[in-house]
Length: 206
Image (cartoon, rainbow, N blue to C red; front, side, top):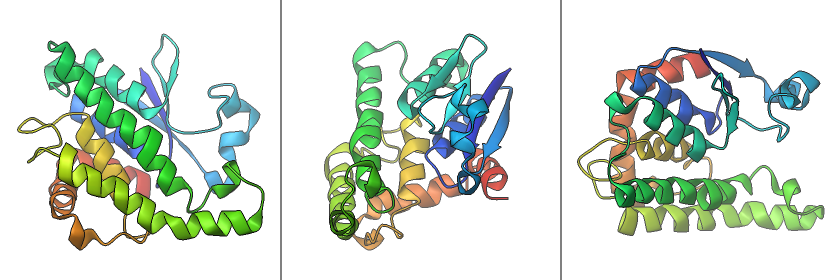
């Protein structure tokens, strides 16, 4: 059985939702970042990066959200979570999720994890101050040029949608004016009422 390792209020929520959308049989293991569970030897044996999510597939452990989401879509093709038969369309899905992973999430992380990049306290504070502008710029680009509507890739719900929803959950804390992002605001609202999303959130936040 698939096993998802996650922590609350992290990007692991995207994979959690996708597993629900796929109708997968899976179990979860909750880590507490406040207890440093991600740095304990038993978890480092699973994921030496000391990050979440991690997905034990039975064939091995996958890390990195785009890889896990692609695996879920390909493992459960009947759920139609990605355009698997169209290489270009599938690459567009991967490109969007890669942007969220490599750029948007990194911009967000500067608010509370600046120590990953610098040691100087003044530099860390400067990074924090930049977050509202940098995250706003990322989401503004998504709003203007990437989001097709009503779902990220157009008429069909894909693995891009739980990932965007997950990162959009953090916009207010990042100091972003959601009123300037009406498409993303509407998407977040519609996602929040999906039964699969409610179930994943209830477990993670309960």
